[in-house]
Image (tube, rainbow, N blue to C red):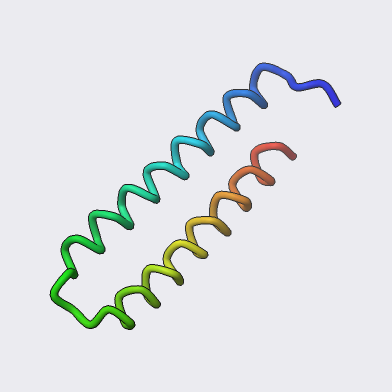
Length: 64
C-alpha cells in the first residue's frame, strides 16, 4: 500500500492532535492536583480513551 502525500499530512496532523491531547491531559492534571488522586486518574483515563477514539475516528474519516 503506497502512501500519497495527503496521507502523510493526515498522519502528521493526527500525531500533532495526539501530542496536544497528552499536553492537555498533563495541564489538567496539574490544575486538579489538589483533588483526590483516584478520581483524577480515572477521569484522565476516560479523557485519554476519548482522545484516542477521536483520533482513530478522525484518521478513518480522512482516509476514506
